Length: 250
Image (cartoon, rainbow, N blue to C red; front, side, top):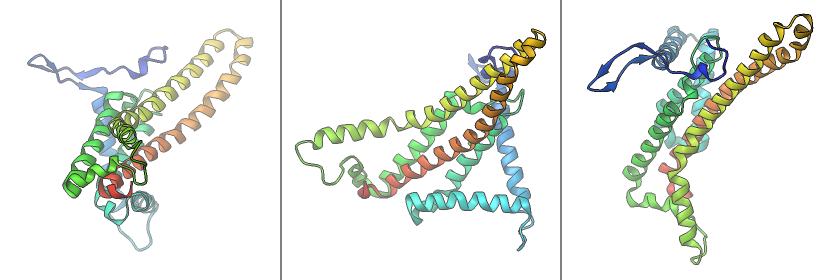
């Protein structure tokens, strides 16, 4: 991998394929998305294969993850929100495992690409729209009319609510993309300082101690951020689903 911190995000074709002028190559990004899905499915299949009354370590982890997402959905969207458990759980695990994969050297962080996070955010946005109108009809539009607002300012508030609603996919996707991108760039920069200073002899090696400590600290922080960003994405999804299920409560 090149020394510059941006090269780690380069999408590279593994199996070049072009049909009708469209580039349909199988890339490193697609590979790690497939590995993420396979790892998640394999872990859950292995963890739930025994289903013992006394759970194994893997079964305990799977049950904790299940209850964590189920509790999040229940708190944010009520018992009716549990019908969306497969969606939210899949998003959480996909983002979490993808983020954690990106922490290993020479692996690829597909969540650092806006096209991936935007696709996930648009999926959630579309489901919220379809669910909102299918469940509530035109009553879903009450989401844009907060209760208790004076009539004089109501048009301005409605306009703000509409703009806020349709910009959700932007904030939803950029938050994940930007955090993963910035964190990995920072980590690569400090790691590069260690290599550069170490080549300067004894004085350089002594000077590389501080970047080494910073790299270790940032690495630990990035593991935490990997979980937090998956959690935030799932939590926002739950909140948006609550708007689709209960627009009158806005």
